[in-house]
Length: 144
Length: 429
Image 1 (tube, each protein chain N blue to C red):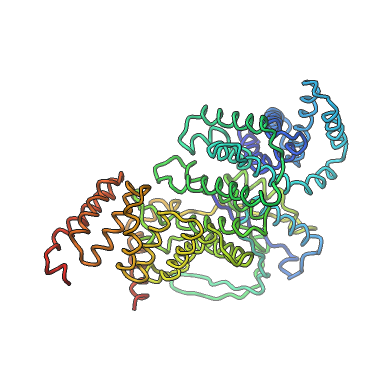
Image 2: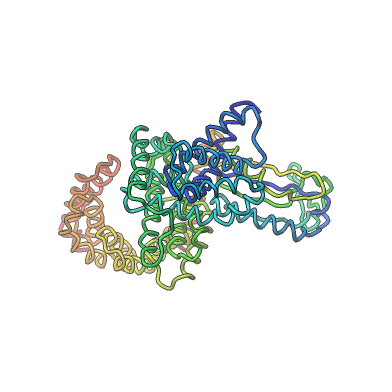
């Protein structure tokens, strides 16, 4: 099973402060450890929310809101995608991560990635058929 | 934390630490079997103590220290204090007295080498292929005997026996705990790759109704392959094998229908292919190609798989390139099955007559005598060429050879379609 391991933002990361050399070195070593154990699928760090935007949905209305966003603790600063056998294994790996936000309290969140079968009854035969139709159309277009 | 939470945590720690633990111990005691026993002792100690004391901050170091203490006890108890063991005992004690961080640093230097030694030892040629597979999953994959047994649909005592015997064989043959050097290296590396790919295929051939442990073997094999690629980053065939497995695994969601029926590659819904695994596979293939101008058998198969992965629709497939890659593969590892695959690719690229030219010589191949895909492929070529009578005979033969009911029905259907078209006029079209 796959887990997304999400590093939450803090004041400094939101201010665009770069990590110290020490933290970069520790993170590098940790990433290497994940890769050497064969569990690392992908990893990315994110720019502060000041460089991002949100699109708010309300009924049929869409409103664009430019960053930065104020609720720092709910924001994301980066993520890993790992493949492990259990949530406990994901937790054990995350416990070994260097503190991503030294000097402040921070959190890393662990979320299991949903697989197609996890969508269960909501992913009805009709929806599957719809997907098949889309693919058929794509194929027909490609042949033209 | 409840006791069962702690047990789940111990399982997780074991999965992360066990291979490193066994590998490090094996270097110290020079015996993989003893190393595994010591590691198991440490696991039992953890199961006893951690539910009461809590999980230690550095569980890996805790397990290693406990196992080493058992190792020293073991050596003393068995009065094996000849000069060699005495030295060993001193080394172990000296390391024991070192502070934990120093120990970690010392271990870190060795960990990669030790893991690689463990892989080569578990896949040693004195062992049968079955024993290599079981030992690799047990020592490097961190699987329990029960998990291996369930995944391979074999009774648990059989696997337990197999592992005990394998460990004894290694000890009796005095197999050194080392990575082979020189000319030996390549042949032994290909033994390791073969074991990893066997594990993968065992998982890949599982069907939807199977115990989830069977398909999970694909993930175990991928993990082993990725570890190996990190340990031997300059070996093109290791990257080739990992790329092949990543790309094949990318299709796993698409290759079974809602009722559990298999879906052939060209009929698969490509939107269900896992793009992350495809990207990883293509990157691995590129690494392999950069390392070596001449692709090995795994890299070639990965390159063929990559042609399919790159095609957005089945109709976009670069069959000319696939046919060329099969031609190289066929020269490198000649096999009638590879030839048959090449025939299909050639027919897709250059028409059924060109495919038939490759298939016809295979008809006298004894190893394909009862292989249903041969008449099925030949029948397809003949039908496309309008030679309906011959095609019908081939489809009927394929139907009689296959053990799969769905496939048999399909073959009989195609035979019937040929029969209705087998008038001289139709054949001359």
